[in-house]
Each structure stands twice: as structure tokens, then as C-alpha cells.
Length: 113
Image (cartoon, rainbow, N blue to C red; front, side, top):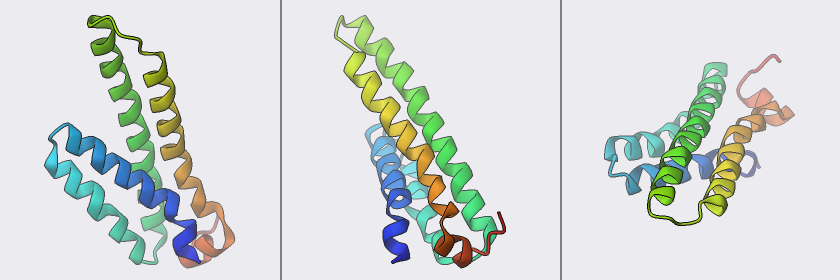
């Protein structure tokens, strides 16, 4: 059942891996695919590390959004839909860390708050 609760985290890291793959940043692809394996360790630092990395991932989506918008503007294409999609992906990535607020995951990772 915890696997279902962790699904947003796994999906977020999968999307980040795809994003880095598109940019030909293969070391970051590997890191994005390996990080979820930390979830097998039942320690509080794992949950906090994952949460921080998800926030960094959301920041990466926002950073990329501005770059993609500049490209779209330079070739005269519409960029509004792109911005909306990437803002939503960034929000979902950032909010994925909230799964650790649930009782079962707090218990699994020995979180006090």
C-alpha cells in the first residue's frame, strides 16, 4: 500500500529523468532513476532528502520553462500553453514531497513531525 502512496514521488523522478534525457544529460538521468531506490531505506533522512530533491526538481522545471519560453518567443511561436504545463509539472513535483505527511509513511520513515 505504501507503494501507491509513493507513486507521485516515483512519477516525479521518472519525469525528471525523461527531461534530463531530452537534454542529453545522462548522468542526471541515472541519478534521477537511482534516487528512488533510497526509499527502500527506512530512515528519516531519506524522506527529508527526497523532499529536498523534489523541491530542486521543481526549481529545475521552472528554470527550464523560462529557457523554453525564450526559444518559443525567438521563433515566434505561442508559449502560453508550454508555461501552463510546466508550471503544473513543477507544482506536482514539489507537492509530491507531501506524501511523507501521511501516517503510514511517517511511521515507515520514523518521522516525528
